[in-house]
Amino acid sequence: MEHDTFGGAILAWVKSAKAFLKVQAGTGDNLLEEDIREGFTDYCLWSTFRPESIDTDGELDMECLDSGMVLFRENCTPGEALESSYRQAFDKDDIAVLMEE
View: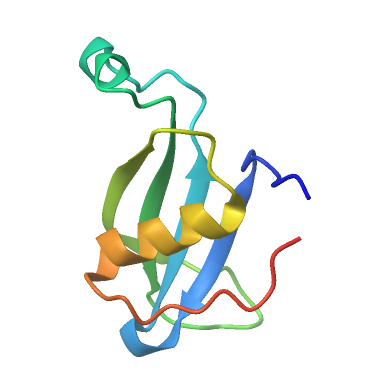
């Protein structure tokens, strides 16, 4: 079975942090020559956001808490992108990917 290459975006609610984790596939623009020399071929970008308040009748304003980039030596799957971004964003290993399409 062939793994799908991550090419979109994932939005996950991290209950313990009361924040959203957004993971987005890299386009290739952020790979430095040094990264390529070290064997990296793919990456994803992540950001964490916290809702300022939840108002179901209005807009959902978000505060950006942090962001980063995870490098991969081969094309990553959506699950790998989510797991690696979660570890980097929250410095924890307690993620479980329940479903991957």
